[in-house]
Length: 200
Image 1: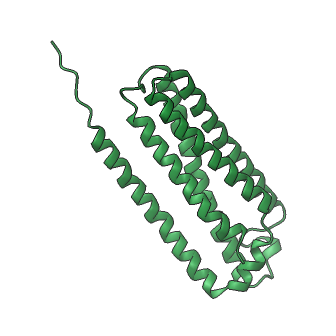
Image 2: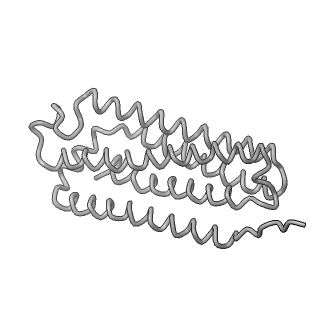
Image 3: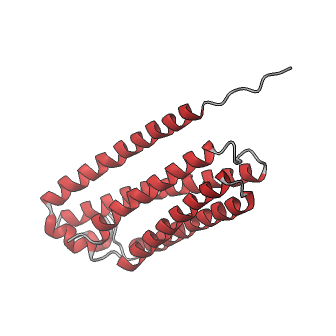
């Protein structure tokens, strides 16, 4: 009689928290770089931030906060054995991730169209701080966008696993870890919003 291998749920959670810590270290370094650059060019950062679309930034914040609500509800649903509800909620979280990326793509295309990027025509004769601002904007929001894309793809995998009962009421740690990653992505954006869109 073959034995069913034990799964190290606690180890999986600890591993996920360690991974999230490395992500915080990555963005933490960028936040320090931003703080130093802004301290050197406060007026230019304030002027450059006016070129960003605050409405799109706030809209993306609402989208991600809503997605976190869906994700948390999905985990609660699978814990209670509601597979179909959990699948719907994960699908809604995925949809939010897609909407966020579309929104960000529209915003980026507008900036490139109007020349607001490092060495772009709109910044050719601007004070040094403004190209630095937009350089950090594209690096940090771009890196965050890649994390949203990775999280969205990860949740697509979770949706398939839910459908195939690889994630279920008695084995949902992979979905829970995916949710932790998704919440981290949301928290990082909450810091990016005021740094770039509301810089004063």
